[in-house]
Length: 92
Image 1 (cartoon, rainbow, N blue to C red):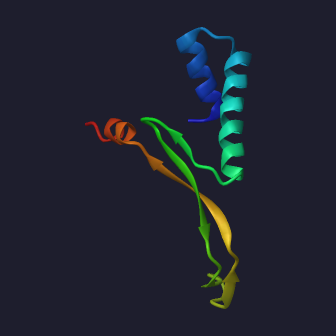
Image 2 (spheres, rainbow, N blue to C red):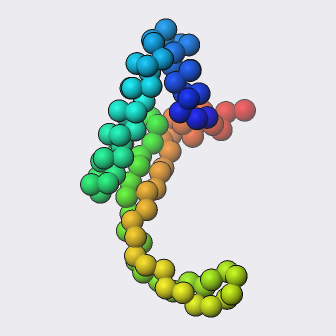
């Protein structure tokens, strides 16, 4: 599902104008992005938790040449789904 499809879904279900739905989605995503960029977790009850983790530098391999290559330290975003979402996804 894309942002456009989410916007259309919100517009169809709520009757809200498309511009309002687009703006709301953008603000929600910006708030999540800003929190993560500050290294903060974002916990959306019943949905899941976004978390920033540090990965240390390590040695890896170039898949084409097989040469050893240094992979620098970095931060990565992790997502763990909440119990409710896992239940919805796993319902047959």
